View 1 (cartoon, rainbow, N blue to C red):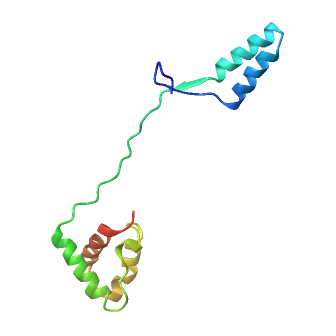
View 2 (view 1 turned 45 degrees about the vertical axis):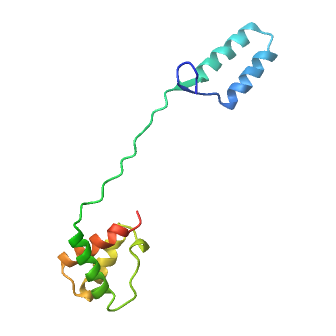
View 3 (view 1 turned 90 degrees about the vertical axis):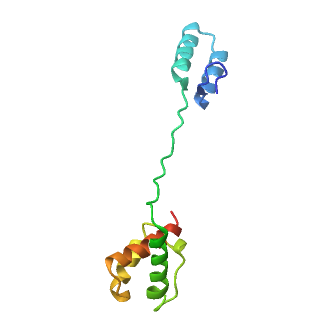
Length: 124
């Protein structure tokens, strides 16, 4: 970081080599060419801070979460061991639910409630 202007400056390894060549060269034109090359290679840029945008989770009522948990426990847990919500990501749960919907005999609305419950604790 440059103390005067707050810009980040970098000096690549090639610049170190150029400086060494200036010190070793007796020819004035060669020194000038190396200095111009050195100046062209120098890069000062302003460091930009980029804000990370994290999408908000959809607002889900406590009632929907409770209904989703009850459905998950009673419909899904009826036939097999229940997975923790964090065992799958928000992107993976819909595939799991789609594959199990007919077997569990749940409606699209019930599947959405189960998904709301699972996605609240799913890994990102």
